[in-house]
Length: 253
Image 1 (cartoon, rainbow, N blue to C red):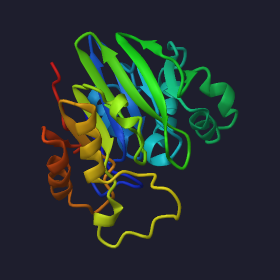
Image 2 (image 1 turned 90 degrees about the horizontal axis):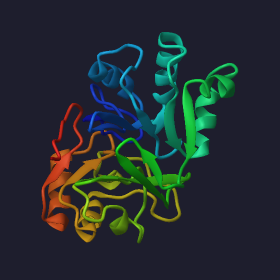
Image 3 (image 1 turned 60 degrees about the vertical axis):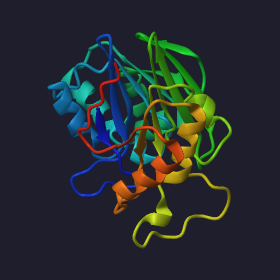
Image 4 (image 1 turned 30 degrees about the vertical axis):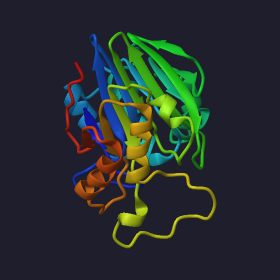
């Protein structure tokens, strides 16, 4: 399920990057950007976040992890003493979340059990969790989750990179950022230097090179025409192109 698909900050009524993957009774959260926590708690039917088996955060930018702090509070105040939740993330994610609480480093360890990314592979419930470092302004882990008969891959945020086809190789669903700042109304100029975000054309090309079965575009710059960007990606990909609108549910089997 899509919790949010905006990049940088959320449009009204939307949220930033966040997804939930369920398989064989195991529920993994992928990123928790601005505005994702209320949607997650509504999905779970629990104000204390009961039902989350693992959390994966790709990098420390707040549009991908700000609501991790909210989930920490839901567990600490709402379900103290519950089993810790595995958290797979670069170390900067842990430090940034801990900085939002007094004695945060110690308290965080009583809610989450940290596993560094990129690293592994790990076993997360029914999934084999693999990760790869992708180019961004901060360390960003591309994610690949595989179980018998099912593979989901996710770029987090990245610029073009030779690792992208392998990350999404033959995936049933490839979640790829398609920020496309150049297509948004009045975007501020991007920083100088290498390209560290994908546009829709590059996202479609990456999915095509990977041989993915379906492409889910995400991380849209606020104000972007999502349908138009999907059409641009489809011209490169050729397969089904989906858009990460909040509440979208995708059945993969």
